[in-house]
Length: 286
Image (cartoon, rainbow, N blue to C red):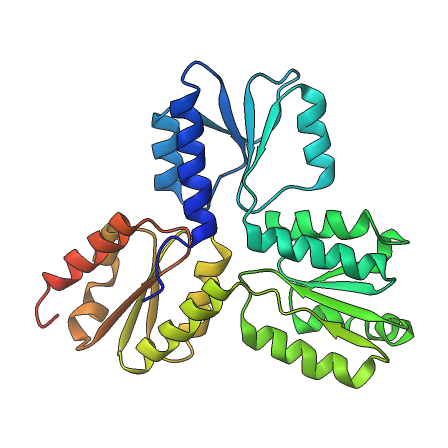
């Protein structure tokens, strides 16, 4: 079952810890949360790895670029402040950035399917705009309604290219493809949803069909985890929790359920998943 850390998240966490162990006397910080999981962030802080939201006037030591990536403007600012940069952007996210750049270089109107405020999308957008002829030649669409709002503009584009936030739902991509194929002269779509996300979603959907309650474990800030919960709630009763402590809030649902399925987001450590499973297994008829 594909649940818990994906390889990009695992790489980011393990490499950051290794950086600190190899440089015990050097300041190591991460701009923004390395991954969307508060327990992991606390663990890193206990090791002396700071999570910062804003850059200091003068950099000191190593600044880690989190798994979601960073905009070109932020990367330059970190460098200008005097930090040594260690880029731990997930390789799959890097691929999306490169595909967006490729489309922009070839003169496509670039549409990024994802949440505009998400750091991964911000970084993809920055990379695409750095290669686009005009700032407005790159557009982020959080849903199909956002695209319909600029339908006339899309119709005027000679070429339209699409990339996708790695953790998006495949259903959203299909919906967009059906819509754009009717209004675009030249449409090029890059399915950049990562394999781990697709496998996780497909396996969870299969499990949900056999369960009368699904428990999704992971941060409420995590895009892939919230998408997982959104998908599953259309199949069966679904709850989204961050830790085993929250199970107490759903005692009635849990007691009534005969078959409970558990899955988790890509930034959820195994020990948190196991605590949830252990607590559920101690309940009656579970």
